Amino acid sequence: MKRAMPALLALALVAPLGVAACEEKKPTDTAHDDAGAGADKYATADPKLARALQAAASASAAADNGPPPTGIFAPGAADARHPRHAPTKVDVVSDGADPKVSLATTAGAPGDAARTASFGLAVLEIAQQMGQRVALPTIDFSLMLGPPPKDDPNPGQLVATLKIVTPAKEQMAQLPSGMDREIATLQGSEIRVALTPDGRESDVSLSLGKSSKPELDRLVQNAAEALVFAIVPLPDKPVGVGAQWIAETRMPLGGVDVIAYRAYRVKSIDGDRLHLTLDVKAYAADKGAQIAGVPAGATFEQFDTLAQGELELVRGEMVARKFDLQQREIMMFAPAGGADKQPGQPPGAGMMTAQVVSQATLVRGDDLKQALKTGGKGHAEVH
Image 1 (cartoon, rainbow, N blue to C red):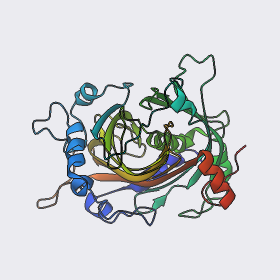
Image 2: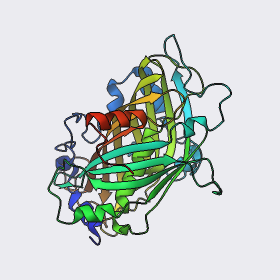
Image 3: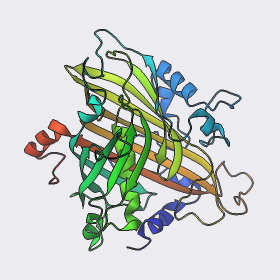
């Protein structure tokens, strides 16, 4: 298993973009036809939300007040916009229709009530495909969400301990013999998310278990990124159906330091449960991406990440009860010495392209207990 993950990414590097991106398909039946490179997911979104999202993503130095066209911020622009370790910013675009409900905890509840209400068991499944030919193992993570130790110097964290890590029953490709034992070594690994009382992340870190295979750390990083997206930064005012807000977060994504913009919309409210839609657009903070499998001397030139999903959130909590997100990421690299582009070739020709499509599904709390009873998602045994 030594160097397994870099080798898989190397196989996913293809050229030119015109072949890789246009023919790319997601590993699920819920794939979106607009996943090609350069597609603007928000062209068909609610116009007001689309304009707000585009404005929020604008680099302060951009002359046209738009997002960086290459998907990579100019030097220093990302740090000026959202420094590392700064809490997520939340902008309420619309508070929706009446009647409205507050997503915060009830009056008189402890300041960290939303975080503690999210503690407990969860099951996260991640499927990922790299390029058109390489499918990583689909993994079931059985998580215990809880607080850090009492003597921890950073008490405002959500800690996800990997209790069981196994290949899912359904795989996109046959796994090599012994892969299940390698994956199981990730048991005991931890993901830590620093949070404000209203669910705004400021930092994400992970530590592998004592027996974990270091070359599998990418699988734990995938779980950490999915967990961040399953945490909902709560708006500071009551919201109704149709409400929209945008969360701006500095975070790692697919091995790249990014500023991610999550656009939430309240689809429906049923008692204490809200059904939300989620759209994500991310921009690389700089050209310093260190991606395994990319030849030495290659330069990071373009970045395109889009994601879309839905989730169910219970009032007074910050982690979704149910969460499903499909994501597509494309990175373009110019080889050392520049791209070998011939006259008349389209933009991107001669570059190497790394592409990843993935789906993350999470179930937790009472919803997980119900799923276990009915044999649905959450079949992994949790101790």
